[in-house]
Length: 436
Image 1 (cartoon, rainbow, N blue to C red):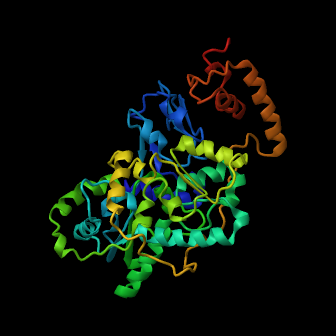
Image 2 (image 1 turned 45 degrees about the vertical axis):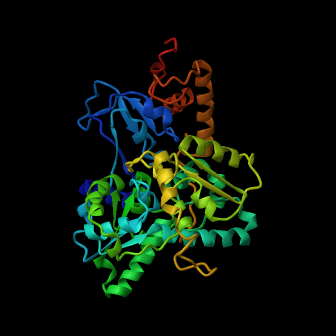
Image 3 (image 1 turned 120 degrees about the horizontal axis):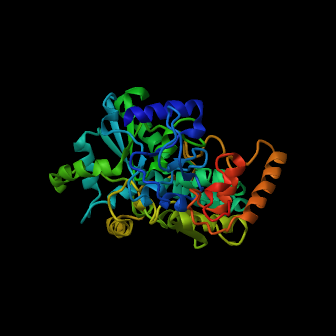
């Protein structure tokens, strides 16, 4: 797995558009259409394709179009045959580093039963082999403070759309370019936490940066892509990304042997930071009443469409999460997202409001290095005139199609099939209702 990720990352350096953490296992794919109907960017088709030696496959299989994929993980969630998989690092990925740091997201606390003290989780991670742990929730609290400041100082850029969910950032980048100016200019909490953790470790140990390894425990594949191929920054300080579901089984053993009165690791985040783990937590941290918080990729799509059409007004902040329930609903977690939300509230119940602060200032490395730019992937032609001509062809085909959007052709909608035909990737005969 790690070798495959390294190959993908190397490929991404030459052609970053095509780096993705979501992959297909063709041996498990049965050719059903669950994934094509739920993909928010229509990145998947189910058709026969040629093998590397040029032989046409016997049965249709899912095909993921790299340009359209935003690594939201929705196809992993809905595939009944487990043919969609997430690519991430193995737990041994930090073995060559002299000093190892674990970045713990708020959603991780929501995976455990009867957890009253999150220091137990942090201490168990140290006992597992990390030299130090750093709470992403601490960076989240700082970002909440800075977001409040930014909203007051930039009324012309409202509503401010959160950039914490990388799948949402990529979705806006390719499908809603008019909203790019509303994206939060701040780094995601994990990037800010990684920067601060590395700086702190270098000062504490005297080691050079290259001897310090930082691993993030991710709830979703989108964050794998965001850290291996970041947008807005040149390079992430995260060296490895572990799946939450891989860390969960071994940490349970260490947690059982923790003596609470002997815990040395001390938490550095309060209710605001921990709240970022579930839907509404980030928006709540802005301390404004004029906010909107939405989770689940289908709901997010509707909100983005309404925002683009200016149907929603009088908002200061918009929080969007691709996963149901927020980060606690990521496909690499182990707990039911709605149960996890209740657990996270229990963990945060007796915490102070916030622990990590910025003293009312923008702190180092808070902002992204360059703005997120529109990526044109849905164009039918290579230029405006060619695209306009092909749009006419799509309209002609649509008049012939039944517009049932059944998916039997292997495309999610009749319009998607028409576009595929115009692009030369399908034929009219693929429609089972058309009188050929």
